Image (cartoon, rainbow, N blue to C red; front, side, top):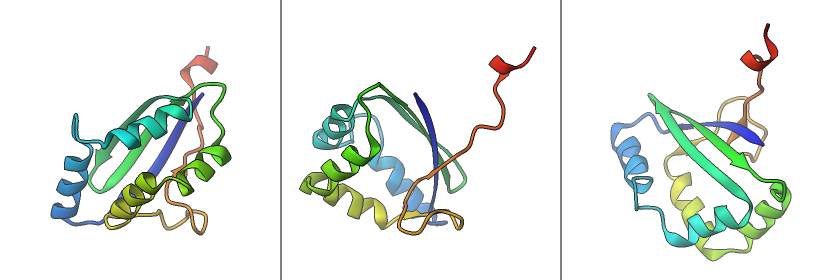
Length: 114
């Protein structure tokens, strides 16, 4: 299943550069990658335009957002990573209170067109 999620970064060049450095090839802490993969996340890409981020996430049939959230809450490495991200990420103004990333709603699919 494909998930499209959005969040903003602090509108600050240094914060954006730091976020990109934390996500550069080979920079992700191994425990974070392992946590993501253990939840049956099979693919994840993050794109940036200005200070807006878009995450494309492909999940398998065993992906359970509630189970992932519970596992993350109990994992000190994930909690440290999330605290680090909190310093530069900004939830969208219309996001659900307490949510970080906001799910996008698909409004068009070429596959559904003649």
